[in-house]
Amino acid sequence: MRAAPRTAVALVALAMMPGQTQAQPPAAGESSLNVLLYFGLYTQWYRMEEALKPVAGHALRTLNARSDGADPIPDADGIAAFDIVVMSDVSHGSIQDAGLTAIDSFVREGGGLLVLGGPLTYGEGKYEESIFPRLLPVEGIGRFDLKWEKAGLPLSAGKDHAILKGVDLSAEPFVFWIHEARPNSEGSVILEAGDRPLLVVGHHGKGRVAAFLGTPMGTAGEGQLAFWQWEGWPQLLRNAMLWLAGDS
Image (cartoon, rainbow, N blue to C red; front, side, top):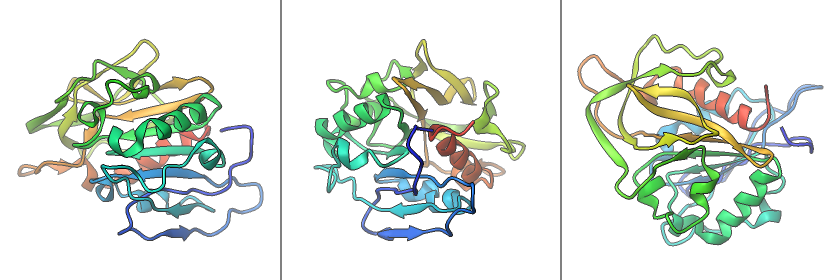
């Protein structure tokens, strides 16, 4: 975590989500978590509230990541109090250069960044002329990078990591739409889908970054379980956010 004490989790999301919720305060000696989320098109399927519910002292705020510009776009001072930023299916048109510059500075100074996939992000988000690719632990992202895997790809553990602590993959969850990318020289693959990277982590300056390349899209076949409906998904997401904030 960053040198400053953590305060609360704030997630920036769509107006259709509650403006803010507050969990029970942490017990003496416990830390809370402070997260800022840009809420894009498919964010509700990532089950953020469920993932954060066990975290004592968290707070949840919402912001609409509209395609023509998130409202508002916090500057460096506006996000400095947070532990992590979550960009969930967010395009360049939504975050804009000003927002990316603020996030770049935030992570370089020790903040965490989680990027979640969707039809409007990574290569589909038109980031090629921006600094966004340099923030990520992956490379090789191009336009039309989101690919349909009709039969589905089963999730499996990659490198042993704190993010996987307590996560049970025995239910064999599947992903059906996945962004094509590969880890860069600093990236570590924590979760795979078939033989493709799904969750890749790395560092940017003093901070930590995680790129989830799946999307909560597609239809599970008979006997299959979509990852976003999997019982272990909230645990995995919570672990990722805690690790990004500096735990373990």
